[in-house]
Length: 87
Image (cartoon, rainbow, N blue to C red; front, side, top):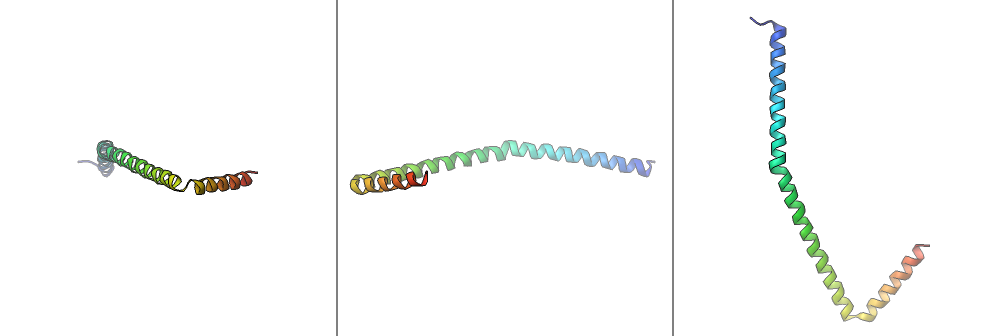
């Protein structure tokens, strides 16, 4: 019959083995499921951001074509303010 100390030591080893197995399972899930999902989400968000930037650039270019004098005045005013702020 096993002593109390041996019994507790055996349980501790079993617990450690179970924790090691669980760590392996979690690592596998992260590697196989989570990492690809995060990669796909990042790629999708990058595409959305690119589309938004292209749309903004088109809208800005259209506004400049429709009102070129106003665009020049706005650009000059921004340049002046940035120049003053940089001193």
